[in-house]
Structures are given as structure tokens and as C-alpha cells.
Length: 298
Image (cartoon, rainbow, N blue to C red; front, top):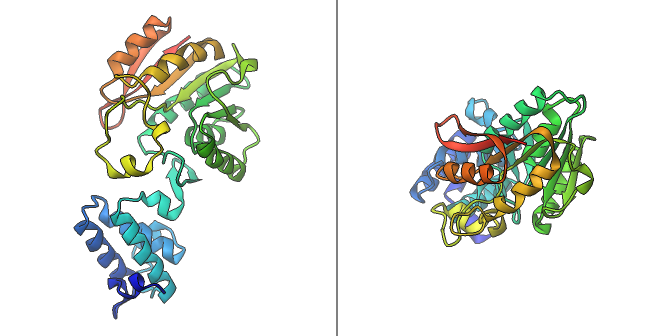
């Protein structure tokens, strides 16, 4: 064991899961981690090979962690105190019904992206197509695409990712979750010309941060790939300006576009899409009341 682990406060007399969760939570709180309790539960559960719910329920309270497990906890706590994302520590991110592999080079899926995913799923279920097609632009770890593929019967989904580093995670998740109706595609806006005029839904959580803006969240600023954050231009919407005409070509008549964006960008996004000829441009408030998604029809 390394010296850092030997000096760890987790190697005290009480190494039960309950005591370790309490100690970890206090350590993370002192480091300014706002999610210290939840993070502590996840870290201890991961070290034990359990689910967070097993720790939350109290069912594992009296389980004694081994020296090796305590060393894992100590390592994770130090890394988390340096604001490394919890998902990088465990190597996984939970999204809707999925467990996705994530790590350096790919944007960690956020819970708020479940909202645009649901709108895309609703549009596909309402489609009159017997075998609907969806394209997820900037799929990253595959959260939106694979959720659609596993939740919408009869759909065929293409997850498009431009970053080779992120695409390694895309490929891994598509292979692991392995629905036959989901296809990972490496490329930019001109991919899949054979689908022009046939797609029912184009969906995406495109980068939308303006140039020169720095995220206030250290986890994002220090660990998320820059290509997944900045959308280009002073308003962050240059990428959407390029993707909008491409989405129009992909969609069949009356097909749906669903785009996640910054909470202050809904008016700009609506103006951009209206100028491009989209109709039924609509802003949607997420469950927290924020203008998070805009939909439009071809």
C-alpha cells in the first residue's frame, strides 16, 4: 500500500461501511464538494462491489472493508478532492436505464440531458413511421442514442461523434449495450448522406458555450474535453448554425429536431432556426423550469 493510503483516516479502528461513509463525506465536505454525502455512498459502494442503493438502505452498514478496499476509497477521495469527476473514478455514468462507460476524452452525460432524450423519444413514438430513424449528433458516450435504441421499439439509431477520443467511448458503449438497431458513426456534419430525407428525429446535445467563457465548475473546466464544451462564436451557436441545414436535409417532411442548449440561449436558438426555415419552433422548460431544449419541425 502506498504511503498516502497508510496515512488515510479510513484505516481507523472502525472500518465498517457506515463509518467509512461518514468519514468520506466529512473529508469531501471539507474540500468543498457540494455532493459529499452522495459521493461518499457511491465511493464506498464501488469499493465493495455494491450498488449505491445497497449502502443507502443501510443493508451494508456493518460490512467491514478490507485493507485493499480502504486503499481504493482513500485513492478515490484524494482524486475527488482534486475535483476529478466521480464518473471518472468509477468508470461509469448512469443515464436513464443505462450504465455507460466514461472516462478522459468524453463528455460525462448529465442528468438534465434526459429531458431532450425524452422529447426525442416522444416524437419517435408519435411518428407514423413503421420503422422510424433517429440521428444523434455529437453522441459522445452514446447516452441519447442508446436510450432511444433501447426504449423505442422498431427504431434505427445512428450516433454520430466527430472526436476520435470520444468515439473510443462511443464504440465501447455501443458494443457493450449492443442493440442491433444502433450504429456508431465517426464523422462530422456531412456523414450519412444516404439518409437524407428519411430521418424522423434529429437530436443532439451540441456544445454551446461561447468562446472565452470559463465554466465555474472545476469538474467541467478541468476534465471535460474542450471540443464537447465550446460551440463557437461569441454566442456559442456556430456549431448549431452549421448543423441546422444538415439536419434539414436529413429529416423527412414533418420530421422533428430536438436540441439541448444553454438556459439563456432559447431566444437566439429560436431566431436561428426560424431564419433557416424551420417551422413550429418551440422552447421547452425542463422539470426545473429552465428553457433547456428547443424543438422544430421540417
